[in-house]
Every structure is written in structure tokens, then in C-alpha cells.
Length: 391
Image (cartoon, rainbow, N blue to C red; front, side, top):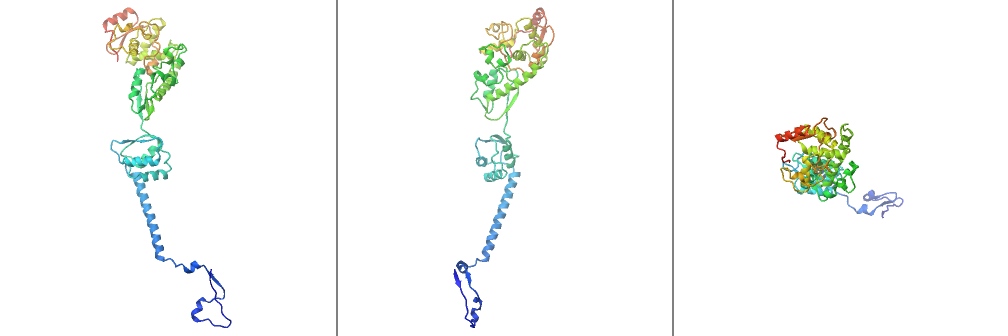
């Protein structure tokens, strides 16, 4: 410490010039206090103004950025674009990709606001359709909500398994790497063995999943596995079939749900007129009861397709094909369905029309003429062309 000690002798009078330093006691001050010059007031004023200006600039920048984020449309064509959020991509990469694509003006603003809203880690993987009327805020909310682009795959009534497989292979954004018709049954919930106790071990019916898919449009996202779509169609068929089977009519002579699918698939391929479904079902079920061959043309066509030999129109030579699907030679139902039946065909299979008709022939106008006796049927055949190609 630097000490200033002032003392006075008894009776002495201090000089006038030293009066301000006189004291009756000892005064101690830090050396730095004595030696350090006092800061200039104008520097403090400048510093305060700089801080204020910086705060105002930040506030203005934040206000403009928030306004642009919430109200200014993104930069995409009027037709829109598809933007993909890859698996594992963080907010920094997503914002960078948006900026690089010139969709947003500043990746930092997008990232900062996403972090401020606590949504930076909530963005979901997938494809997003961005349209010209969207703001950055709407883009962020869409990604957080996972409103990804949906595609649709439709299984059409009357398709066989090979047609379904072919459609899956060309479906947009479907992964077909594991699509194998031979191994599909092992990945499905409902297979023939579950529907029919009569399916013998090792028979084609045990593993053949023909017809066991519900005809419907199935929405999916990019990269969905084809087998996943088949599993969904199979589960829906299981659900619908159980419901329909429980409500079957008393005159239904089919033994189990698998026979119902087989019958419905034949009905589906026999006519394009739903009004005829129940009548055709009645004809076939009466023929089964009387141990008559079904003589269903669609089963012949299916047999020929399985062997890769069919070229329309159907003729008498085709009827001689050696196949378990040849219902002109074999009594009873074919071993498996021949196509995917729709709900109306399934309902008809389980609710056959009452009556005595045992025959029918195409009338050349899209419908059929039904007959009770063979004589009536032969007369009807004589009036119409018996063999015609089928789609």
C-alpha cells in the first residue's frame, strides 16, 4: 500500500497550500486507484449506443426473417417439386439441401427457427410434395407431421397372381428386390391350408396363394416393399372373407372358405355382369351337388396360361388340355382359385340363386342364356357362337 501520513506538531500551523491533504488520522489507498486514469465518459456513451444498435439490428433481422418464414412463398415451379428427407438427415443437412435447390433463401433462418420451435429433431423421413403456394413454415410443419407423398397400387378384380406380380414390378417407387412368387406364401398370414382342412400336405393348394388378395387400391410411400403390399391385401382378404363366410346363406353348399374363394374366382371370370353372379353360382353349385363336371371355360384358359400356351380364341383342342384345372375333364372344383374375386363375386358364391338351371351359354351381347335341361342348352348353343376369346 502507498501510505499518506499527515501529522502535525503540537501548536504548528499548516501551510495554506497543504490544507486539503491534512487529516487527523492515517489514510490508505490502493496503488492502482491512485495511478489509473479515470475512463472517459464519451467512450461509455459510444459503447452503450453500439450495444443498442446491435440489439435493434438483431430485432429487425429476426422480425424480417420471421415474416419471410411465415408469409413468403417458397421458390418452386407452379407444378411443385418432390423433396426427399433422407434417413439420418439432420436439420442442418435438410436446410442446406433446401437452400441448394433454391427452395428457401437462407438455410440458417430455416435451421434457427426449426430449433427455436423445438422441431429440428421431429422431421420425418420421406418424400414431400412442395407447392408454389407454401411458406417455409408450412414446409416445416409438413415435414414434422410426416405428410409424405402417397402412391397407389390397385389390385383389380379378376387378376391372377402373375398379373399382380407384373403390376408390382412396374409400380412407381415400389421395392421389388424380395418379390418372388414361389416364396410369397411363407410371408402371408392367410394361406390355403388355413382355409381348407382338406388340403393335402405337399399339394399345390397348400402353398399356392392365387386369389387370396383383396382387390383394392393400397396407398404406400416411396420404397415400400412389394411383399408388404401383398401382406396388406392378404390380411384384408382374410378379414372380408371371414365376415362374408359367417353370413353365408343356408343353401350354400361349399364346404369351407377356400372353396368359396375358388367358386367366386370362377364366377368373376365367367361374366362381366354382376346381375348374373348369383345365377351362375347357383348353376355351378347344383352341378357340384349332382356330381356333374363344371365345364367352366375360365378354368381352361387359366390352365393354358399356367402352361404358357393360350392364344385366343378358345377352341375344342384347348378343352383337351391335361390339367387339374380342366373342369371339362375333372369333376369338382379346380385345386386353387383362378383369379382374385371381388366382393360381389364372393357374396354370390355364398348366396347362390335358387332354381333348377344347370347350363348357360354366352349370348354374344355380354350376358348369358340359362337352361334347365340339356336339350334347352343345346338349342341355345345352336343359336350363339360357343367359343369366343376372353380378356
